[in-house]
Each structure stands twice: as structure tokens, then as C-alpha cells.
Image 1 (cartoon, rainbow, N blue to C red):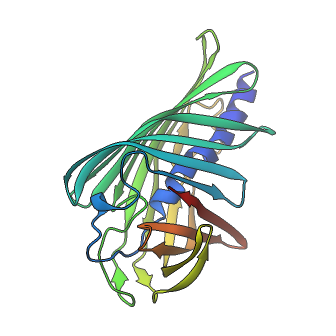
Image 2 (image 1 turned 30 degrees about the horizontal axis):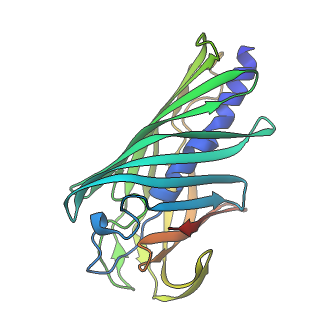
Length: 263
């Protein structure tokens, strides 16, 4: 039973990382009149959804409430849904998150609840911090300029219980991280997105990621942090205030993270 739980918990990591893909890797440039806390998508009842490699994994964000202190300082209550294939079936998680923006930094904290296999429940808590902004750039620049690097880290805790609350296993991922090179901004140009053709800027850079240290796994074999390097192109579209598409290339593998709808 424990071996089953371990393999399933390890498989859950793409669902957790999915939250960060659209945020941590989504950096670009903005119009001078578009400060972060005034982003068109950051308002009550706004919704956006996205996918990874088609429908391989999906996520959706609903903005429930926004407390705007200034153009660059605010907090927002979000509801996040995500689902991904785990152990041969799709598992969906949903839960409340809080986005906090202050002094050029942002944090995203919250928890997922999901029904698991074999009549179990999975509760996942996520703590992420970014030197920069989720889903939006940290700087206001013009095409042809270079943005400073960004960096961030995440901690994840997964608790597996039976439906009656009896605990089965707990897994922790500590200090998963990402850092980027300086980011080169391309020219504003027409780009086909899931919501139509928009004027967007390609932002290119190298991202180095670490999977973090995994604890709570029997044997603890091969669970040390593993690093990887990817080449990233973000298509940032000022009209939406979002990176509408990220193309992440790691060796011969190419992954696309796409925003499918913004309402």
C-alpha cells in the first residue's frame, strides 16, 4: 500500500508544478500605463483557463476578491482548479489561494483537495514566492530591451488520508526553485493565440529549475533535488496583461503552456 501511495504522490507533482508554470515562467513586458495591480484580468469575477500540451493537464483561475492598496501593492483571493493524468486516470483538485503583491515580489499560497484512487483523499498545500510577478512582468520596458533575471521557490506538502480521515502518508517537497537568465524582449508583432490574433512580444531566456528535496518516501532513493535547464519563449500580449503562450524546450522535449480563455 505504501509503495502505491508513493508512486501516486510522485505522479501528483506535475499537477502542483502546473500552477507555477503559467506564473513563474510567465514574464515579459507591459505598457507604461498597466501596473500589475491594475491588470485587466486581476478583478473580481475574472476567470482565465489554460492547458499544458493540449489537454494533457489543465488549470483554471477565478478571481474572487481583490484588495488594491496601490498600483503595485495588492492581495487577491483566488479559486484554482487543476487536473492531470495520475496513475492512469484524471485527478482533479480545487482550492482557495491567496496572491500577494508587494515591492516587486509576489507570493501564491493555498491548498488543493482532491479525491484519490482506492477511496483516498489528497490535500496539497503550496507555498510559492517569486522575485517578480506571477502571470505578468516585473518591469515596464520597450521591445528590444533586456529584462533582469527572476527567481522563485516553492514548498509543497501532500497528505493522503482515507475517506474517514485515517492518515496514510505524508510527502514533502522543499525548496523547488527556478531562476532565469536575463530576458530579451522581441518586437511587438501579430501572434495567433487561443483567443484570436493579438499584438504580442516574444520574451526569450534560459530557465534553470530544481525539483526540490523530497521527503516522506520509503527508502528515500533518488529523491534528492535534480536540476534542469530549459530554453523558454514567452509570448506576452499587453492587451490581455498576460503571457498567452509559453514554449519550454528541454533537449528534444518541447512543452507548451497556453492560456485558452480570459473572461
